Picture (cartoon, rainbow, N blue to C red):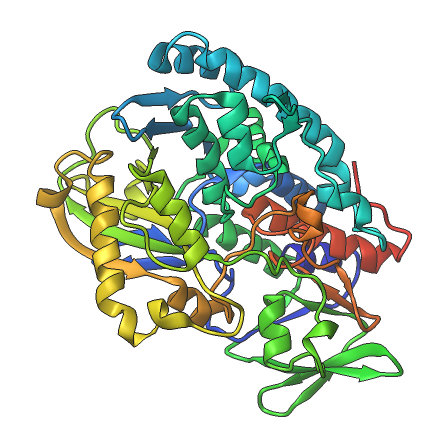
Length: 491
């Protein structure tokens, strides 16, 4: 939709074909008995991306279309030893002070020094990895831009994010804080490159924002902007093939065998699903573009309908850290469910998400192994039901550290797993943002696709997964179509 609105403003006649009955992709909503829950992202980072979209596509700025407020504190963290700390939103000095107070003198200083190194990695990679089309030669991105300290007798630098936490932060609670940012984006800290340090830097520098009515309200606003710019939407209609003539995409085939001609085709579906379902024909998986094959994680989200009002002073987002880090990392590596998962608990104070002031809507989310691109795995099939329900029980048990009286207040719950993600998007995994390092394995597909006239947009294409990154992807695709191959992005 971000690409569609920009292309319509540039004078193109745009039609969006969507196989489901609604818009927004993974930015969905669950509604029941007056309760409402975001089933995708719950917070927005880098709101400037959507401010730019709304400025470039119409006279009404973003804040006139959605309510947008900073979440403060940005997050509360409950660590394995019971220590807790609340971190202010977008305040380096406030974060350093809070960590020193909660974790002891020196903790804030070490975290601040780490953020300085993370800023260096951000400055080196921000423009080429977020704002410009990927170049044909991506070998320079295989190198990690994080300036890791050389520690130990052999003076070796950290290679993974877990190494950074262990060697540079030297406190298991600070390491857990660092690793929770990787987990939130679906990266295994044990294998994610040190460059993933840009994730906490991005959040703590630019802040965390909440959209009134939930993130689904942002999808509503982008859809309305598209409609105002005369973008046509056709729901309940799947694209089953891309028409190619003389090496160039010239239209699409729909599920009723109808064909539609086009000057350009933008594919927003996940790349693994496009190729697996032969929407784009191929003879060997070697023909598939790069698409973060290393990402093997998805989400389990438990939507909780609670009786009783949200208490005064409740924190919007609480991260309850695993009490068994080794088990959690082993579960991600081996494709099983952790006994003690790290969970993110969201408790928005939003009257639009609850039937009245005497109830509360809460979501609890954990990152889990989601298997390969081809197989559902036993976890997410019918045979995995009891194990998944038991895992949801453990998630709710952990969430009790963030929600007083949770068990007694629970009316009902809905458990969403990678099987739901597959049903809605065609893949079990959730892609992460583009990261340098790791030999280039975490680079998504370039936006210009084979054949000519075809473009990839969305989380599986440059610059990767995440709400802000999806908006950037739309801007890049629109720029490439309007300005041609010479387009180099916008400042």
